Length: 219
Image 1 (cartoon, one colour):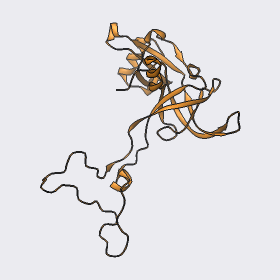
Image 2: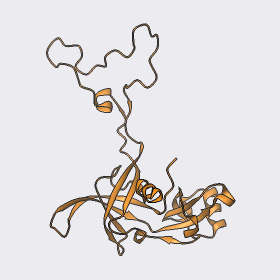
Image 3: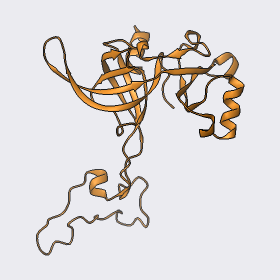
Image 4: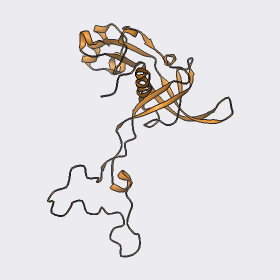
């Protein structure tokens, strides 16, 4: 479960580029098309047992949704959205049902945590998946790319957690403490320093940095 935050928005990763700061130094940035998102509902501890907001992102036609979702949106009286995400929040009192969230909730210099799914690479061997070293490639070597022993002496089963071949990627990953370099309100774009998970077009969640929030609370 992700830690609560104070601000959050959904977006799509567009790609990476570079921009120059006032000193003329190059800053590598990831461009994100953020929002606009609609607050579908606000959850509170008193009523629901926890604090959170439910966001709708990317409007779509009614024909693109199944009947349960159509009924859900009609009951709320809101437009239809392709994506619904619920995000734990520290300050639900700052949000209202029907409120529209855009990239301007963040400003230049803010620290954010970005969550997204990494690229799926399918079933891979232990060398690519765990960065193991291969064996000698000389003639006669029987361990070019083979896996070595997977069990200890006297143990009649494979130990839990053994690093072996398997599915690689397609995992939910959060990169913390990334700095917002630029906010383009007209085009709904966020320029965030550094790389974030996933391919171009990947859905991401941008939230206020948890570690910076904890430091502020401790102070």
